[in-house]
Length: 170
Length: 92
Image (cartoon, helix red, strand yellow):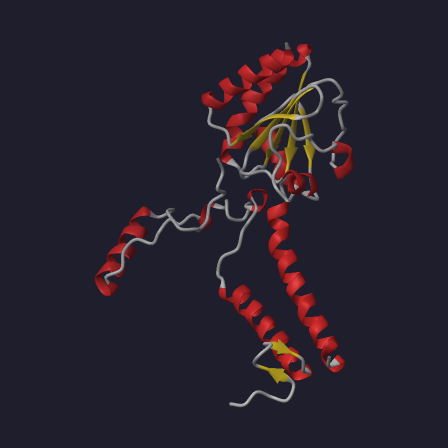
């Protein structure tokens, strides 16, 4: 065996492994689905005061100022928060804007009494790997994902929210 | 062409340093071609703020789009090909 070629062989296989890992890694980082535990909010350095979600039904919604359907979703989430808060629903909206000024402008035009946090580092949104904007995750009282809502389609989405939230709050 | 001293056609195995360095060079070149040659990239849904800007819309000027399509069809007999990639937030 010719040992002088060993460094080159090692380099070749290292490059091949690096290519393989870079190709496989995105596929392995799958987005959150029904039944998965939702990541703990404390682990992602979110801006804003973190709520105590233990034992609550939680609607986590990812939004941004540049997302048009997000503007339509806010009044619906406000309605849900007011209607079901006493029964144990918490709505948490997580902003993914680059600039905090954009988020503040958005909230001035679409005021919300529910909790709004900001994922400035985009760590939570990357971990959850939302399929589209906006995306929302309805969590049951044990913190597991009950359903994933891709996008917001007005009354159709609102009706689904109501049906699912009422079933979880029983 | 005769095989080199350290290359065997029977075993198809590289045993010389030169052979492996060529393999590394070709591999890196191939990877470079794939990366640079591809004009497509994946933009995550939460990173599409720049694409959501109205100036990134391909249909923001209907009259201009109509004129361009007429020109391309007249000069190049080209048509279609729109709606692939492009701007917009991709929401919903």
